[in-house]
Image (tube, rainbow, N blue to C red; front, top):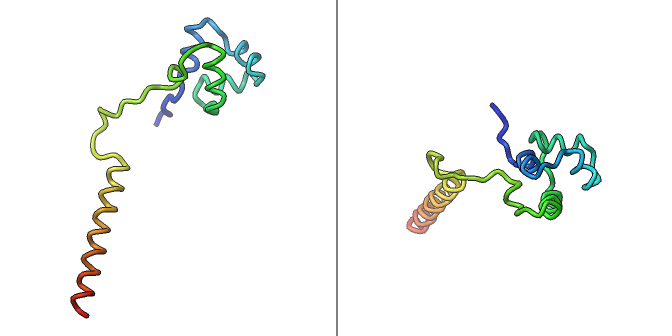
Length: 103
């Protein structure tokens, strides 16, 4: 399975006609670090993304791959968790009520 692209750093650098070496020198990190970010092998820390956005004068959101969950099918993990939690609570309440009626 292909790793999802999480950042758009290489795209933004291309748009700004900035190369990886320039960014690496400005940030005082290795060219290999920036290369791994651009290839989405590793992800920059949030502080690095903030600094890149500030340096390039772009909205930090442009550096991150947008998310759109509207095409996802089925419940989210959160929805499943909340439904199970609600169901477990109902079952526990029924057990308590059953125990109370026995006494």
